[in-house]
Structure formats: structure tokens, C-alpha cells
Amino acid sequence: MKTFKTALSVAAVSIAACLSTATPASAATADNGVCETYEICWYYNSGYRGGVADFTQADARYDQNDTFHGTGGQINNNIASGKNRNPGYNAIGWQYYNWTGWAFTLLASGDPNCCVSELPGAYKNAISSHSHRPYGT
Ligand SMILES: [Ca+2]
Ligand SMILES: [Ca+2]
Image (tube, rainbow, N blue to C red):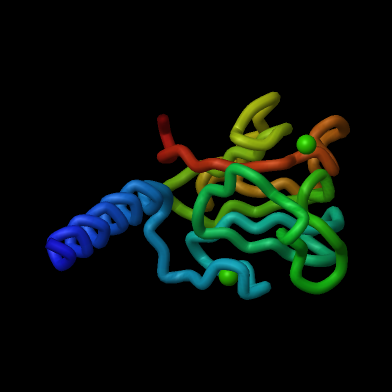
């Protein structure tokens, strides 16, 4: 019986893993400080400068432990510019945790609106989570 229960919990974990990877497929390594193909990359300064935060998955909450690589501190409410390097997915930055408030979209890479060298007024230093959506939807 114990073995059976273990098998069940492994199956549950596998299902959860599948659900959480509904966002971009990736050959990139998230959170290594390098902005790679398939990633969304946020920068502490405008012009894609200062510290970088590189993601392959959605993140519902930039908390205290989420910091830029290199210059800069916490990601939350500190993003000044961003690049979407995923060709299949738009990246959407949100005002608040859990993908709420206003949304600022970076279209898929290859689109002229994939990247913004300086977030406009109210969006700058205000993004707190991000999600993905297939390009063209
Ligand atoms: Ca990376
Ligand atoms: Ca915010």
C-alpha cells in the first residue's frame, strides 16, 4: 500500500509539472544572468542596461528574493526596460502580483514591439509579475 501511495504522489507531481510548463518551451537557462533566446528579460535601467532578470516561465510574484543579476536590487517595481526573445509567445508585464492591474505587453521576438528600451511613464518601475500568451492570440 505504501508503494502505491508513493506512485500516486509521483503521478500528481508529473501532472503539475506539465501544467506549469504550458508557457514557452525552452533551451534557455532561466535566472543565469544571460538573456537567451526563448526568454523574457527585464532590465534595471533603460536601454537594456544595468542588472538583468531572465525568465523562461511566467512568474506570478516578484518577491524579495527575486533580484537582478548585476546592478540593481529587487525586480519588483524596479523594471525600466525589457526584451521578449521568445518567438512564439507574447510576454505580459502586470502592475500587481498574480497578473492583475494594468498589463504591458511585449510581443514575440521578431515583432517590432518585442522590446522596449524604456517603459513609458506609469509602467516604469511598476511591474510586479508577468505571464505569457501565444503570439497572435
Ligand atoms: Ca538565461
Ligand atoms: Ca507593481
